[in-house]
Every structure is written in C-alpha cells, then in structure tokens.
Length: 144
Ligand SMILES: [Zn+2]
Image 1 (cartoon, rainbow, N blue to C red):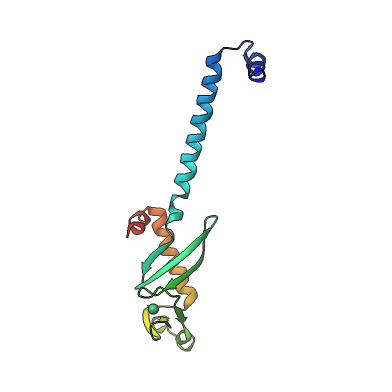
Image 2: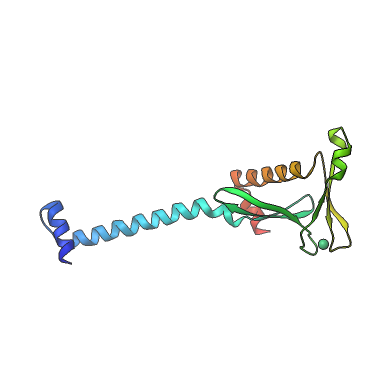
C-alpha cells in the first residue's frame, strides 16, 4: 500500500483513496475493451466448416491463414479422395473435371468440380471461405 501511496505522491504531489479506485477502474475498463476487441477479431475462427459442391469442407487457422483445408464425405464424414487424373489429359478448361470420391461409401462420387484440378479446387474453396469471412455471411453458415 505504501508503494502505491508513494507512486501517487511522486506523480501528483498528494494521495487520496479515490485516486486508487479511479486507477483500478480505468485499468479494468481498458482490460475489458482489450478483451472485447481481441475476441471480435477472432470471432470468425469459429467458422471452420462449410458445405460446398455437395461435400463438407473443414480447415484450421494458422494466424490469419486458412490451413489444412480438405473435403469430407457428407454421409460418413471420412476424408474424400480427389481424382484429378482427368485434368491432365484434357486441353480445354471446360473439360477439366475433378471428382471427389469416398472410399468408405464404396468409392462413390460425392461431388465434382468442372474447370480445373485439385489446386484449382482448393483455391476456389479458399476464396469462397474468405469471401464469407469478409462480408460476414459466415455467421449464417456457422449456425447450420
Ligand atoms: Zn462416405
């Protein structure tokens, strides 16, 4: 207590108990504001799955980047296999198709994306996720 008194005395030349309470109040207020700002900025990080192209996409965040993005079966939840062999043999963009296959469900097709290979697919899904984070529509998505 005497240190606190000394602090106020050196700063203002005198000490009264209300000074201490005012300081405590300001410190608590600042801490609350800081927590509020930080939690607001991180809120979108709860958004980590979405249904796109008939399959479930899951990912993690590393700082602000989307990492380990992959697709999962909407029926059994296991990781899907991305078949883009077909993309290499075709020349025109519209013929490029990537198939999403679930081994667990008898190698059945769960989704297909026309226009590119798996890198293309991951890019557009990432883009869709980032778009929803930016415009705030991910909040509706997270409730589903
Ligand atoms: Zn499945």
